Image 1 (spheres, rainbow, N blue to C red):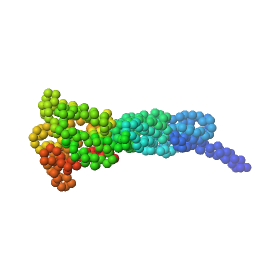
Image 2: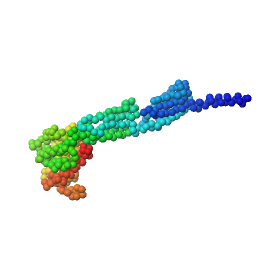
Image 3: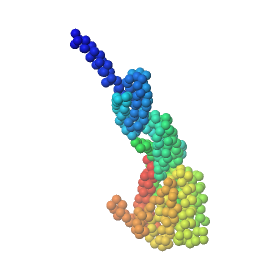
Image 4: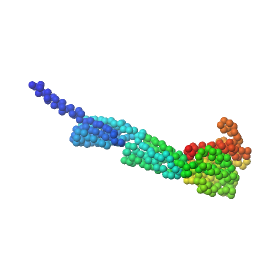
Length: 396
């Protein structure tokens, strides 16, 4: 009888103790985009503390029921895809882990693939987590120009931003959006206003023949040739090139200008003779004004060809002075102007040569006057020009 009476008492003690072992449990889920929910099984009315081990944030509460759901206890983090949480109630502790997406695909960039110059372009940056609270480094590299970047803030609670820029000149624009854990690239091609790239090939007699080969190599581009024989920047009485440049731009509205000019220069300017530094500075001032005119406030790109060394005569003095002025004029205009260094290609080190190796064969490249390029040399010069235009992503 004593043993039978003791058995129910023992079972009662076991039943009272058993729930305590399972009294505290914790479960974490990441079903809602950007958020982590916790489900806590705990003793009602007893103070409970839940902690996010990654951020150190914690919440203390007294549950009113055995199960408590904290629907938005934490947010996803780029710092770690595996999150660990701890619940403490009295002497009991429970833990829970959950895996969230990484930041490798958190941001999206929506940009048009094509536009028409010089229109504005809208690019949408979107946070797929819908949390915001980060900055994006947004960069645009226009055709032939240096990259331009800015910081775009994605405020907390905001999940998209629209960034705008203007595609001034035709060609391919490289877009980049970067945050510490992700980098996205897009390419947008801005078409010329008329559908075909407009190239102005101009200068003195040096541009002749070269312009024909540019036309052959430039695909669907429309080329306007304007050669003014015997003219020069230092002899405005025959043709004022600065005024003529303004007239050309108003008439043609070129997307690309190819200039080969200077063989007839060397005349006194602003009271100084050729070819000292004062003359070079004045020539550079006039050229820089022309370069800005042809650039059309960023809508166009200028390719100015340097003069290959001549065989003899006064050209041996004037050509290096002209080239020095061209280099001085182009300083700081790299986004709008590219110098095509024909001097280094045809006459490296300033040494005249009538022939050079092209494709492994020795070929004559200069005319008998020792100044102009012949057809072979002009074809090579045109190839270098078109290669530069393509390298700048002005031509596909």
